[in-house]
Amino acid sequence: MVATRGGPRPEGSALGVDIGGTNIKWVHRAGAVVVARGTLPTPAAGPAQVAATIAELVGARTAEAIGVALPGHLSPDLRSTTTIPNIDGEWHGYPLANTLERATAKPVLLMNDARAFASAELALGSARGHTDVVFMTIGTGIGGAIALGGSVLRGPGDRIGEIGHMTAVPGGSRCACGARGCLEAVSGGRALSVAWSRVLASRGTADQDRTATPEDLVQAAQSGDTTAREILDTAATAVGTVLGSVLTQLGLSTVVVGGGVAPAFSVMRPAVELALRDRRRLIGPVTFLAAALGPYAGAMGAALNATVQPLAVASALPRLSVI
Image (tube, rainbow, N blue to C red):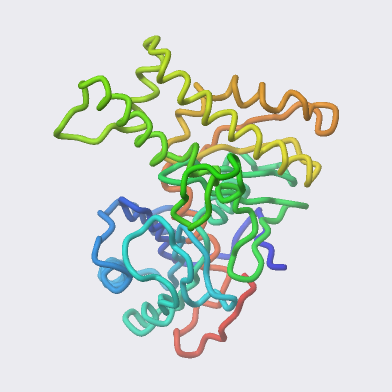
């Protein structure tokens, strides 16, 4: 089992890149200082174009190492991608680390985006000072990570902590991963957008020029729309059901919530806590903490972990699975 520890990281200049379904966020970190950051649209042409975009970004910076966070799974040696459900293109078996190292002559580290988010929040954010935490990111999908004893757990293919692909509704909607009823297929940002878009279409009030967003759904719920409230309560019940199982299994009671759709959680929280009520005798009261580092947490986590590796010429790097 691979663990990523919180706390101080080695000095070094690293570019952290967080690849999302819509945007690529990046952070250039030198020592403990973020010297630059930014956002680019994620290319729709597939992994080769994504790699070319990152290589071009690296060429404009002076970073000595590159960390890349992705919303999916990696090969056992953490060098290639395997399952990336929410980004277009054929990602299975794509040698992203090797491709970037050839293009940039920099050492490259790949990791899951939720584990990158957790690494940053554990070292620098709202989980700092905690040792045992469950992390949940709500974006297009739902990601997760687990910290035990002050370390973020990873493992072969960086697959530990996939809360979003635990079954919330048996036989439910098809998830991008191929299964049915996954939590992210019920409660992720894309699922919320689809559910609210269908309601607006049935009412004849859909905006033909734009797709409904989770923010639209939340605003409607806060304005007293009972159907919007029901959609969020259904999503929240699914979140509480899955979190209850995770917290019971691990014996934990602290949850950090972040991601682009995390503001919806403030509306969902009462229903989440209601779903957790029956678990109280087993896990006690659950503490929810809002992520502190904002939308660049994943990129920061990737940069933090990239500097753990020796800052050497790419061709001289061993293919390590431990960071």
